[in-house]
Image 1 (cartoon, rainbow, N blue to C red):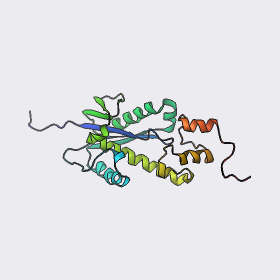
Image 2 (image 1 turned 90 degrees about the horizontal axis):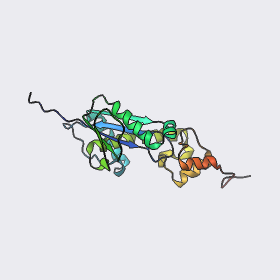
Image 3 (image 1 turned 90 degrees about the vertical axis):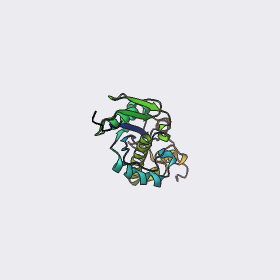
Image 4 (image 1 turned 120 degrees about the vertical axis):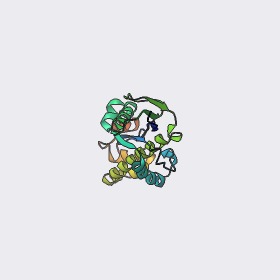
Length: 204
């Protein structure tokens, strides 16, 4: 024994974007550095957007390793959202440049990995590494929605981030279904199958 402490490298994994009607599903994997703690880590959904945007660069700077990966709209539609989420998580872990000793997954399912993994329900509220992953995944995907919003402002993506609000559904009915929408999701599929014959406010 050399007397040097060996750190057990724990990787936290979380996703963002399972519920929205458009865009990829994003997963992040983070191995925190115990020597460089980050104050304020919490479930990204419980943080303000400003807090998430403040914490994300700190996580990228101080973590031992981090990675972000995606599963595309096409993969979501062909695999289903659960399997696409597992794929994005697997890709994120495999993209790390440090191999973790254990992976903690937010939720109740784990992707198939080459390292030990366990699922923790509401782990983003109890495990700092999962909280950090949730923040990276959320901020990355929110930026994707802002980019799409600049190209397709008529859908209001910067506001609702792709979730099925009444205003969002009305915009899809009015403006159609671009390629970045998940056609397997029921609200989108119903609009494709039953396009409106006319729209409120249309002038003959």
